[in-house]
Amino acid sequence: MALRLGRYVADLDPRDIDARTREAVLRCILDALASAGAALDLPAVKATQEAARTLYGDGRTPMWFTGQAVSTAAALFANSAATAALDLDDGYRQARGHPGAAVIPAVLGLAGERPGHTVADLVAAVVAGYEVGLRLAMSRPAYAPSGAWSGYAVVAAAGKMLGLDPGVIAHALAIAAQTAPALPALAGLAGSDVKEGIPAGVAGGWAALRLAMAGYAGPVAVLDDARLFDPRVLLQDLGGTPLIHGVYFKPFGCCRHIHAPLEAWLHLRARHGLDARDIVEMKVRTYRATFNLANRPAPGTLVEAQYSVPYCLALCAVHGGDALLPLSADHLGDATVRELAARIAVEHDADIEPLFPARSPASVAVVLRNGRRLASPVMDPRGDPGTPLDWGDLERKFRVATRLRLSRASQQGVLDALGDLRAGDSGPLLRALGMAGLAAP
Image (cartoon, rainbow, N blue to C red):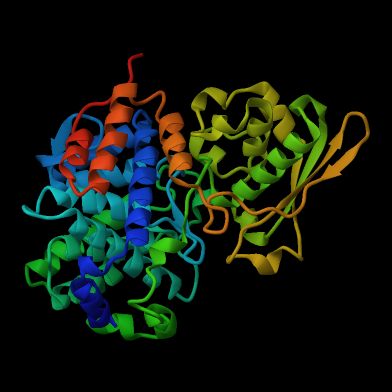
């Protein structure tokens, strides 16, 4: 299996990637930069940047939007942490995790290391990273947080970017299988900056690749163990329509399990002209995985807030949807939000349960102060392939999410550079990422 995947990566011909897939890659890049740019001032991100430099040293690869250059390993670690920090990054339903926070930092970080690379090479590396990472995630017998399989995505993406042969990639995948973070705690319950451990997985994947490039042997047969990886899932339609087309994008900075309840509330608000002050109580009906979240109505940290259905719903009701793009520590002590969150209940719905994980729907019912009872239909979150966010939606997300972190000139510079990338020139984007882009206080 490891060698099959290695051959897929090495043989993926950039010339065979169609325009639709190239656009999917561009959307993933824009979304990752929105997620990272929104998180620049978070203590966890600043701590990761400091640790990255200490652990891996200086170099020429930018830590995005800081004006600082570090080693490739440091940049991959720090940029991945920024992308994942606010739970704004993309995801894939069947993998129940987040590929972009691993793949995009790896590919853009290595773009400056391979002289003469083309945008087509960059696009192929992104496609390979999503494909291999997601397949290995989905083929596991049980759910694991994203950091447990992020390393595979990095091996594939970086291996393609560096033009490595199948054997080296196969050994790197095998090394990553034995050295990936175990992550025994569910992110929503653990409630720490570790969350899903994506930066640790990225660091492990990059280390595995460098070891394999140096001649270090991995246990390549580990990917053949059907107890660990289902071969049917792993190889089915490999080389067909790329899995990157199944990615979802988030309009809100919180766990994906919370997005359908938010959409259901927004539907009721728009249809009936509701206000937060109208609500006596609210009930969310959803699938069991939502109960893996801590769901604290009065979270003490941004991480806890990202995993709380009652808090996010109350925040949206009181302050509107953009208050979750991204979540802000300024709202954590809001008494009005906390009081409403305490009156929001989350209940299991047996009819919704079979729809997950192919879908992640929910419904919301409210009791109003005038005695009326209203209920939404069962709704899916926006941003899934069936309810997509288009380029304009993602551009708005980038502008809103980074409004307090990047200057308008920096925002426009990134968007213009993505236009250059679409036209075949990666240079402007790499330069934009290397510049300090902080907004004026």
